[in-house]
Amino acid sequence: MKYASIFAALTGAALLAACATAPADTPAVSAAPAYDEAFPPAIEEISFDSHGDRLNGLVYVADGPGPHPAVVLLHGFPGNEKNLDLAQDMRAAGWNVLFFHYRGAWGSEGDYTLTHVIEDVASATDFLRTHADQYRTDPDHIVLVGHSMGGFASLQAAARDDGIACAAGIAPANVGVMASVFEADPDAKAGFMAYSDSLQMLHGLTGEKIMAEIAANRDAFGLQGLAPELEGKRILVVGGDKDASVPADAIIRPLIAAYEADPAIDTTGIVLSGDHSFSWSRDELIGTVMDWAEACR
Image (cartoon, rainbow, N blue to C red; front, top):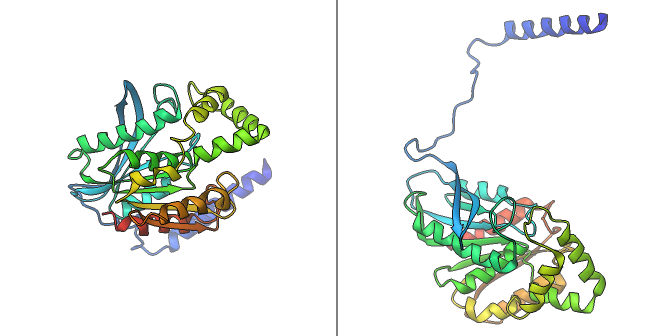
């Protein structure tokens, strides 16, 4: 107690001395950055319907009256990496960003399936289009950007929506290739099923159910086969050279080559230094996505 009292007394004396010697004109608070007071940037909590279930999300609204181009930002499986640093940087560059959780994911209603994930992307883009005035959004300039299973969903949804001109897959999961891997490697199949069974944040999901869905949709869930439906669109595919979940040599480079082989697809493909979440190369990833997105405004 004796030493604590001495420390407190000395600390208090030091603070008083510092205050006494501080310049009188030192500002207490730094000046606020400039922003449009009539149309300020904001984060709006939302929920919207997808096939009878309510999905939870956020809209990062950009500064100014707009209308702003918009990104639908899609997380992976189960969605631990949400890429919200990318959302903040894109908003600062003048983009609105809608981030949401699919059916059955992280508190959204319904059951989680890969088919529902694809359908939910369409519901999210429809929400942005029908609420364009409310969120100062340009309904004709909506871009899809997804990571991992979200990258799979981004490309799948873009192939189904003529109104989407640009879509990006960041380490996109090629579920068609996964089906072949699981067929050839029982240990990989068992591991994925066990992992799926552990994901309590994905309601209605079991390893058995998702494996049956992957097997039943092997061809439809392949990303190379989407090429004819992606003609006329700008597509970005980004991989990580140290990604153990979506390996660059086995999945990313063949996917880039397949899209580049179709001259009607404006393909940008790049492999960065990075793991599955680009843990040591976030700035490079964000810069790559934002540079590509500029042509989609």
